[in-house]
Image (cartoon, rainbow, N blue to C red; front, side, top):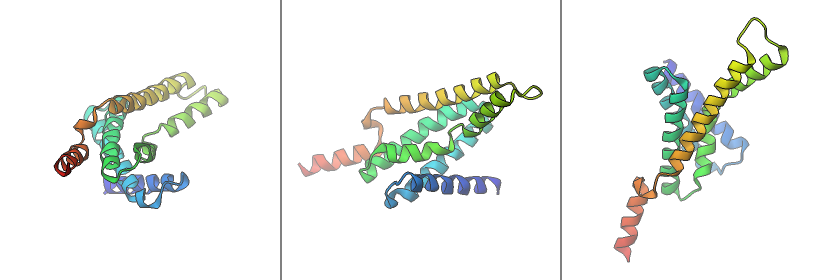
Amino acid sequence: MNLLLQFMAAFLGTISFAVIFEVPKKYYIYSGFIGAAGWMIYLFVLYTFNTPVIALFVSSLILLYLSREISYKLKAPVTIFLLCGIFCLAPGLGLYKFTYAFFTNNEGGVSASSLAVTVLKSAIAISFGIAIGYELPPQLFYFYRKMNKKNKRLS
């Protein structure tokens, strides 16, 4: 039940993000599913390896793959789906905790520097996942190959 609630929260949160950033309405559902899938992959990898950095890296890599697949299918820019989908993975709470600890000189709790390192690791893991995903050749994507075969038959 908890996973279903998290899926729905990620789905609705991603769609809300898409609305705020004026993504065309026809892409709301796709963006929502990509964001929710990215969050579920993150939870699965986190449960499996118990390392948030690895979970963020793998989920952002798969998220980019899904974004590229759907963008080929819908003939839309990848960034529409990627930016909305990555919303659930962004280390917003960690950044908030770091900022709070930094400005309040949190003596009894976790130090601001350790929180900053955690947030930095998270951001680097996400950006590496995206960078590596963008380096994948288009031939790896199903819809690209399908479209290419269809174009070859027509010519």
